[in-house]
Image (cartoon, rainbow, N blue to C red; front, side):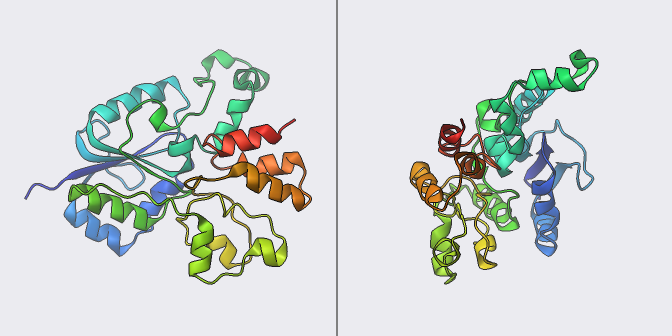
Length: 256
């Protein structure tokens, strides 16, 4: 039996989303029986240029070499899935998009001409067609299993876009904003973590990106009512998914 082939590629990132594969444990072994993992540097297999049925891509595009690689990966893939905040929204490194990154390089390195770096950290979809985006910092194992299962059975995956607040209600967590006055991004963030931070009394950090119909300005005004300064509010939005709308426009509007 010819198994479908998958590959896991890395660009500028912390490897956290690749670790989500390794952390699957026994389900990863079951997956390996169903598909052939052709390329996965974190786990061992190395064959980056082989044609595959599904390519998972972690990390943002930050160098000219990245531009060449992602075009080749897209050409060799039937489906391309961006995984994690870096691949879907530029990641934390996208914070440099609001500054003169070339000047930073010149200030740090004695010979900046040897540094291959684009002006911006950009998501994969900025350069090639992405068939499915899995948000999260990092993604979770269930997202991977669901995506592979749906695509191999030719079912169109249904992205998770519910707000985290709904998950808190389902799990009967007491709202940290109401009960403790804790700033929380849950009302504008899509679920994916299972409301992990609110479950231990902490506000959401917006790891899984903007939810559908997220009203960033309304939350910003509410955070202002908590006594947060404009810069503090901007930091809430311009953090893990800073390049994603409406986080970018809301956060940028609070910077002076």
